[in-house]
Image (cartoon, rainbow, N blue to C red; front, side, top):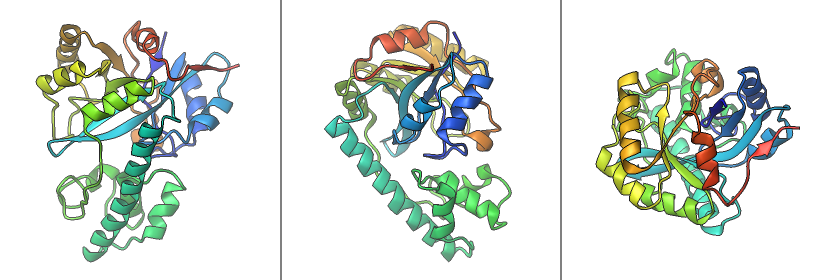
Length: 282
């Protein structure tokens, strides 16, 4: 079974609508795809209505967390989206994203970057606003030539001249919230190259203690050596080894299906969820 458990659409910082993400997933010969947009479930209905026969959708999201000043991403699956506490935290994160993006645009204007909030908002098209939308506006203005150029100290990388912090959950609290809403959690790309922080094993062990279900092992930013280390850590902690492409459409060269979860991981993760169920295409 080919299960890509990490993908994004235009309701957050991907470039394609949820329906197109589902079509591309089927074209990539996937059996299962999880839609995990940042801090939102807004794309699930469209994705479910567009499911082709033979493809199963796992409703999910990628929750923004922070620990000791470092960004941590948590993949959450099959939780009850109506759970009051979890929904409230998601709304607060999205609101903070909006204020942060506006403040970044203002900072960049002070650095003679000719972009406006209206341009960034148009690129986001009603989705959850993120730094990639600002980066795309900077490309359109001719300031940079690629999205990664924006994520540097010169511009909007962490601590950069145009960077602004925002609200994010403590990862242990996030794990508990998702579990309380009947969902399961996987730590996303814990050792991703270029992210500035390799999440230590003791931090992952602490999260396992409070209910973390798995670790994303197969990811485009993990080399084979790192995958081996993470697989050993997962086995030691009793966590499920997962995987996914982290596809963002055109921003990542349409790589959906390029990485999949290890055999059996999908079934193991879903067996622990009680808040929702996967949706099969008809």
